[in-house]
Image (cartoon, rainbow, N blue to C red; front, top):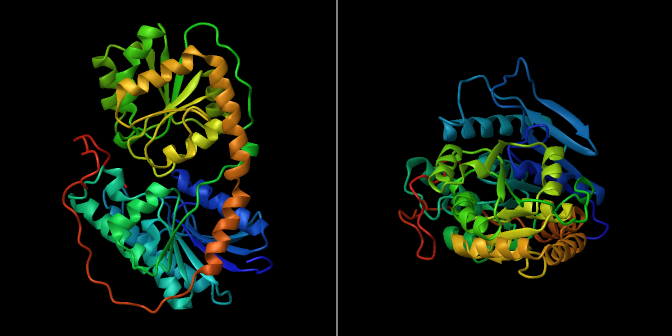
Length: 426
C-alpha cells in the first residue's frame, strides 16, 4: 500500500455538519486521516433531514482536503421515525442520482459503505464503477435488540444488513465480538474477509487532566444514548448498593433516548430519584467538564459494538468502570486501564464502582495507563493505515445471485432476551 494513492468513495448517511451519532464522527475522522496519508477521498452524504432542494440544494465542496458531496433530500414527505424504510430508500435514490451526476469524471478505486442505511447506493455504485465494495458494519439490528428481529421493521433492517454483508467484497467490524456476531448472523461467503479495525480517537480534542482526590460525596457519570442496550437501568439498580458504602453518591446522566421516562421511573422505584440527574445531550465542552468533575464514568452496556465514549473518557483522564459487553471488554482491561464487570449484573457493577471510589489513587493510576494505551493503539492515523491496507487487498468478486435471507424469529441461544422496553430504533 505504501506510496499508492487511491481514490476512495466513502458513503455514509451522516457526515458533519449532519451528525446523528458516533458513525458521523467516525467517517469524518477516517476521511481526513486517509487524506492525510495521501489518498484522494470523496464522501457521499446528505443535507439535513426535513430540508428540500429549494432550501438546501446538493453541494460539492472540499473541506480539509476531503471532497464532500452533500445530497439534497427529495421533496416527497417521509419521516424517518415513522417511515424508516421508505425514507432510507428515498435517501439511497438521491445518493445514487447525485453520485452518478457528480462523479462523471472521477472513478473511485474502492467504494466504502458505512452501515445498512447506505446499502442500496453503495452496492449500485460499486457495480456501476466495477470496483471493490468494502462495508463497515458498526452494529446490527439483532444485537441492538438482544437477538430479537421478529418485528416488521426489525426484519427489514436485518435483511438489508444481510444483503450488504453478502454483497460486500470485504467487511470491517470495530471489534472481535462484532466480527463473530456478523459471521454468525449473516454467514458471508468463505471468500469474504472480515477484518477487525478498532475505532479511533482524536486525542487533541480530549485534553488529559490528572485526577485529584474529591472532597465530599462522589459523583458518577454516564454518557450515551438512553436505550435498553446501554444498561443504564443496571446502574440505577446498583446505585442504592453504592450509596450504602459511599453515602451521598450521585449519578449524572448525559444523553437522550427512548427510555428516559422509564429510567426516571426506575430511579423513583429504587428511591434514588433525588440522587440521579438527567441532563440530556451535552456538547463536547460540557461533556469534558463533566468528565473532569466526576469521580468515575460508568458504562454498563449490555450490547456494545465498540464504545467510543470509553476512549474519549480515557483520553480525558476520568477513571473507567465498564461492562465487558462486546468492544468494551476489548478496549478496557480490568485492573489495568479500568475496572470491569459482567453485563446486566448490578451487584458486580456496584462492587466495581465501590472499589474505584475506595481507592482514588489506584483509580487515577489506571486512568493514566488508559490514556497511554490510547496513544499507541487508537490514533486515527493507525486506523486509516489499517483501513487503507484493507482497500489494497480488496478484489471485486464476480456477482453471485443471492436467495432471501433466513431471519431468526427469536434470540440466539447465547444472547440475553430483550426487555419489553427495548429500543425500537435503528
